[in-house]
Image (tube, rainbow, N blue to C red):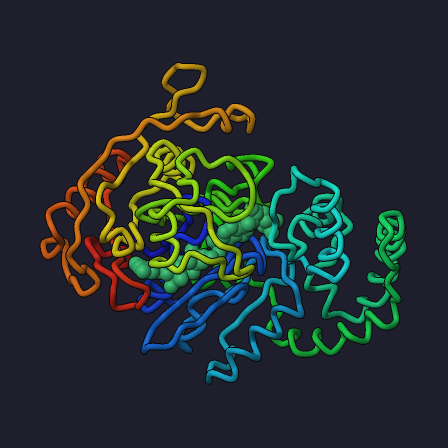
Length: 428
Ligand code: GDP
Ligand code: IMO
Ligand code: MG
């Protein structure tokens, strides 16, 4: 059993990471987000209340847990303050929230540029969440980003003034309005005052907690197939959402990581553009799954594209992340589907193909080869163990486990925290 556990989305996001993180956070001392920003939307349900988080780690509901927003994140101060206020209204005061002074800040022009970039791409648009994620990471790599430490310091005005010299030129060249530095500064100063008490050196904080033997949970956002390096480029997000992102996004050495849990949906979904070989083009099955699984984006409310479980992509994901276990979520949504398909191989140029090709043009040509399993009709939303599942549901889980080659450590039969069946304990 482990002291550190990473939760990673194994597909194209929205696999149920928030639910798993929140569940495991009951056993953790620290919960850490290490990449992404408010493009994420993590849903958590307990005591009949549903919470949606975009930026703040899913351990925030437990006042004993230290919640860290790591240096690898890009943080929109407006979204952050809104989310804090929303939580405060519900009785969660965020006193246990620590924000890395090295995290980059998403400002209004990043969002504007995200929209402009998408428009310029026309039919080839990525289908981003338009939260400014790509432009913020672009500035980070170009070394012109503003970080939390600057944002809450007295130097913010001069940093903003310098950056706006560049950004206004860019905005005007695309036909957008330039930004007035004084107006922008005064709006952001109010937000900086609220955020400042939470900003600190989270790297030292986190490593000290680990040295003390505290249990740490790392909460991934997005999914492995949206990773900037390993995903279906260019239809990806702009950060490393895979487990490797933990080390650079939180400031811990690679050997710190003990368990890596891959979160899989029992089927597959994708929001935004990009190839999706097992997609079920609009028919009664995809509509059934979308409605039953409430497959609409948590952040953008877009209907999610629905597909069969893709074991080729799932295995690739397990490989690049080094998963030590898998979680299978939303199994209940498949109840009532007569015959369930699983993709076991692709065909590319009439040859079997067992991984995700680098070129998106090749991935678009991959044809899935399926096996079919009989479904089940029994309600499984109240089962408490693997043994209570109908035989066909058991066979489905066993097939996923064999195909992906990773043991199932938990599965989930409903959105509520208590609809979680644990097969193996992760934390010490
Ligand atoms: P995340 O981004 O990975 O945290 O996932 P989202 O919250 O965006 O999407 C997952 C959705 O599935 C949310 O609406 C959850 O409440 C819901 N959910 C999670 N696990 C289950 C489950 O086992 N069954 C059902 N029916 N819904 C689930
Ligand atoms: P969670 O954490 C699903 C997708 C967008 C788009 C692509 C790039 O809830 O699983 P971006 O705004 O990041 O530049 O968009 O990535 N995307 C997600 N899809 N779940 C998410 O987060 C996502 N975050 C980004 O739809 O295709
Ligand atoms: Mg989500």
